[in-house]
Structures are given as structure tokens and as C-alpha cells.
Length: 317
Ligand SMILES: Cc1cc2nc3c(=O)[nH]c(=O)nc-3n(C[C@H](O)[C@H](O)[C@H](O)COP(=O)(O)OP(=O)(O)OC[C@H]3O[C@@H](n4cnc5c(N)ncnc54)[C@H](O)[C@@H]3O)c2cc1C
Image (cartoon, rainbow, N blue to C red; front, side, top):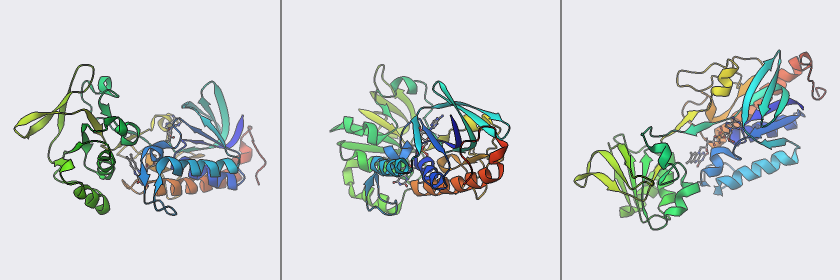
């Protein structure tokens, strides 16, 4: 199966790229492991232009519908390997291999973990990384959120709809979130307690999380009994596939792109949370915008180099 462009990732960057590439009349395949990426799990989105408030999953469904209407092919699968064949690439996902002229990496980042010894064993058993996905289980319970940035504050606000008490555990000296979210946090009053300059040092419990141990005492104890712990401490970019092609990273481990989302490898572009563009400002709107730019660069490259590839998918428009 031959394509002009294979887009890896079906989040805002991937679908933004797909919509633009298909309107350039490129033959497009989007391969995505989890439909909608992080936006689909983000809960309420109130800062995406055109919508006062929309659930992240619904926003991603709207993008997918738009891509479907433009005949974008999509595949729910994980890309396991990519091989370079002169100016073309062979992308392996599931049991199939797809030939393409251009690649756009839109594969976002994985949630960062605390790095504590029994964290993996307790994941899903009291330790979680997504309030939208797992928050409702804690209806009427006591939970804690580890974080301090905007995503963690949004998570606390959302979790407070179910939980009877939420502790926000912040390593630093202050909470850094959008002012509107700080105001909402403050309005929650006693339901939320913020513990500054505190770290979770141990997760205690055999088959299920029962308590956490802190780096310093709170209410005369360094342990807190909770029903669940949510971790929202940023993300680690998914760069292994890109590295296998020799794509350059910046010193923080993000894919290095120029203003047109080109990497150092011909025919390879990247967009969204995976790239160094816009620094640490990572949002749905910037991801979708970078996807549009990456598609435009892939289209320009395809016009110049398309015929170099023996797997020519469609005549250049
Ligand atoms: C809790 C939370 C709340 C947020 N709230 C907001 C908000 O209110 N407004 C806002 O604008 N932004 C918000 N964001 C940020 C926003 O979600 C991200 O900036 C956005 O999702 C980035 O899009 P992306 O497409 O770059 O990456 P992602 O959304 O991470 O998508 C990456 C895609 O790549 C896929 N993938 C990864 N590896 C592979 C592979 N090997 N093969 C195939 N597919 C692969 C994934 O499955 C996924 O489909 C929030 C984020 C979080 C965590």
C-alpha cells in the first residue's frame, strides 16, 4: 500500500496535518495508537477557538469526521518500525507495511511517572494518570493529585466533582496554572488542600494503594491515607521511532524542527507536543496549527521529490 504521506499519531497534530494534506490532494494514511491522543482524555476544553466549551473527546471526533469527509484513511495501530528506502519510507504497523514518500511524526508524549519502586504494580490499583478516564471511580472518596502545573489544577477541579476531598501535592513553592483555573481552584474552598514543597516518596499498599509517604510531615505525620493518587507531572516525548531514522533532538529530548516543521531528515516532518517549537507551551491549538504547517511542507517536498520514489502513490497535482 503506497501513500504520499503517512502521519503517525491521531491527536490534534496528526488530524490537523491530515485535513491539510488531503486538501492538497495527497494520498494520506493516519496511523494512531489511541484515537484522539491526549486531547481526547483532557476533559473539558474551553480554549479551542470556535467552542466555548467542548469535551476533548468530542473535539477530536469532530476533527476525525472532517478528515473522514476528506477521504483520509485511518488505521488504529501502533507503528513499530520505519525503514528508509532512498527518498521513501516503509512504515510497519500491525502485520502490514506501508510505503510512503513523506512522514509526519505527530506522536505526542507519554505521561511522566513518579519513578517510585512499586508504581507500575499499583498503576490502575489506586495510581492513575488521567482524571477523565479514572476519576469517576473515586466518587465520595479521598484522593491526591501530584502536580503543580495547569493540567494538574484542571485535574483537581474535575476530580472535585466526584471526590469528597482532594489534596494537591506540589513539589515547588507555588502552583503555576492559568489564572482562570487558579480562581476556580480557590473557589473549591476546604474541599481542596494544597501541600507545597512536598514530594511523594513512597507508595504504600500491597495489592492496592493505601497510603503515600511524604518528604515532610503534614498534620504531624509523613503519611497520608488516600483512596487514589493521580499523577500529572508533564510528559516525556515519544522519540524512539524518529531517532531510528536519525532525526535530531534538542537538549530536552524533543524533535528539533524549523519554522516549517522540517526535521534534519529529508521527507520527515514533525508537529505537536513531540517537537521543540513553541517551547513548553503545548496545547491543542498549537498542535493542530503545527500539523497544518507540517502538511504544507510535506506537500512542497512531495512536489519536488515525489518522482524519485518508485512507490509513487498518486500523480502530483
Ligand atoms: C490533563 C490535560 C489537560 C489538557 N487540557 C488542555 C486544554 O484545556 N486545552 C488545550 O488546548 N490543550 C490541553 N491539553 C494539551 C493537549 O492535550 C496537547 O497539547 C495535545 O493533545 C497535543 O496533541 P498531539 O497531537 O501533539 O499529541 P497527542 O494528543 O499526545 O497525540 C499523539 C498521538 O500519537 C499516537 N502515537 C504515539 N506513538 C505512536 C506509535 N508508535 N504508533 C502510532 N501512534 C502513536 C498516540 O496514540 C496519539 O494518538 C491538556 C493536556 C492534558 C494532559
